[in-house]
Length: 255
Image 1 (cartoon, rainbow, N blue to C red):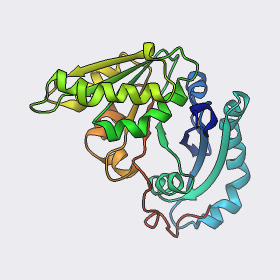
Image 2 (tube, rainbow, N blue to C red; image 1 turned 90 degrees about the vertical axis):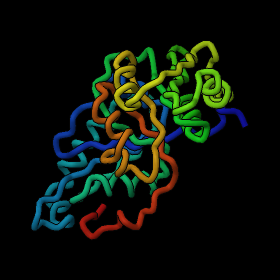
Image 3 (cartoon, helix red, strand yellow; image 1 turned 180 degrees about the vertical axis):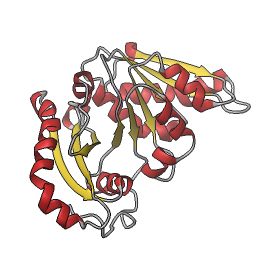
Image 4 (cartoon, helix red, strand yellow; image 1 turned 45 degrees about the vertical axis):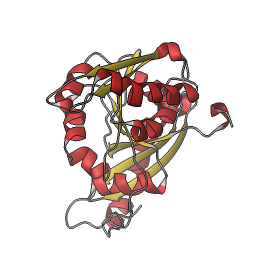
């Protein structure tokens, strides 16, 4: 089956209600080739049940969520809306990303245009999950994609290219990405996170592979957290797999 015959990758985009921050048009254009699961989460005040909050604020929240969905729909994107009244944003993201089988989660930031995407790679398993999504993002065939590998101890540039970057590039071209758009880069660093952040300053978006075990660690974990918190461009975090949703099944949620 060719890439064009498969369903597009999916991404979870969460916004805080009732006053969601708008997404930049360039970011909407970038994501409109994906299936967008738009999650509007309304923080439930203490001593208020999710049911009470829904009864009181649902119509207002739905209207606000529609305003965020509209640009995606005008761009021709597929949008699934989920409205949640919750006391825990992260568990909501984790649960819905699993329920909707999302391939990635967006950490938004301002983006004025799209010319270059940075894809830091830890290894080939990482690249296998990332390649289909990157291919969907650059369908227009005009965006450069840089595959970056931070050399590990005793690893040389030659071995990195042989065992990581070139096979990863093959995965990307196998998904339909023009080989002429790919750049292969290696770098040595004592602090990989800071190095990736510095390099990302020259790019318009970053695609990262999730490390174990979950979205929660993406936002509160170690190296990925440092990258996510420090870069000034949108980050698309490709999930490693299906999270256990049991933790997320909490009484405070009532979507």
